[in-house]
Image (cartoon, rainbow, N blue to C red):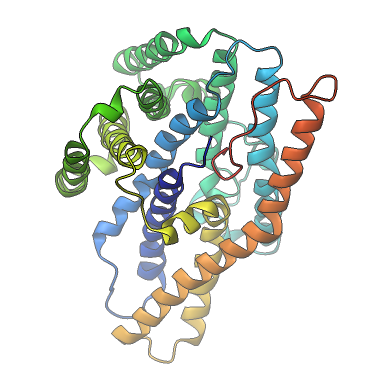
Length: 371
């Protein structure tokens, strides 16, 4: 199975959105003059919603034909956990070192009370993890656990299982205030699961070869509607600032249509997103984990060293520096840490999940996709 290039590019878009959102906060905090980043950058926080949709799509894509096979659940969990934890722990220890030296520099909105054990293992809690953006990884791990159980089923039962899971989430959120639940229940029943399910449903639709019959022109129209109508409408109505079903269903549906349309065009060989976005998508996990630290460091240096604190040019230079630093550090982390870990994980998975010297499972999809 070939690497799905457009998925990598969409990952790149998602992580750039999150970086834009936090860059806006840094500029507002450290700028001494007029701001140059538009308020629309606040919409970048929905990059996490896009990540969740992508995650559901990828999980179904990389496990096609593996349902109901002996040992597949453990193989899957090894792949997921080895994908998440080792690279995350690097940034956990970096952030912890800063926290012990200067607690006010880390998650200042949480005060100086940090649950280190929960943060290390990415367990649900009442506070943000030490690595602030890792809250989304807690949801991802929950998605993986549920999906690992679904792998025990026959593949023909995946669709009804996903629909049942989604129905349970919707009903519970309509009846109860999930935000008042204990941390573990709050994660398990959070509407974010719907975005993962939407991505999974898109993958099922494409894998059944029903979607390629959608004309390329219609897929292009869908992309235009999402980008030119859907996203501006969500921003104008402040849906992005809400919590709960409305936000998740709206954004999940928009991003589900976006993934569906882009992947349809790629499958028809009509369209691929730029390689620059694919490149950023490859290193998106390292960028995501490191960007808050990098932005904060650049912001503090900006405050201390800016020769023109009230100049618009000063802001332009600072913003460009932030972007370059985030991407540069993300690339370094990807090449030096993340990529070697992925390669080692793949070798161990091949060695441990085989019988009689031959792998009993399908070949692993390209490591860059298998996230």
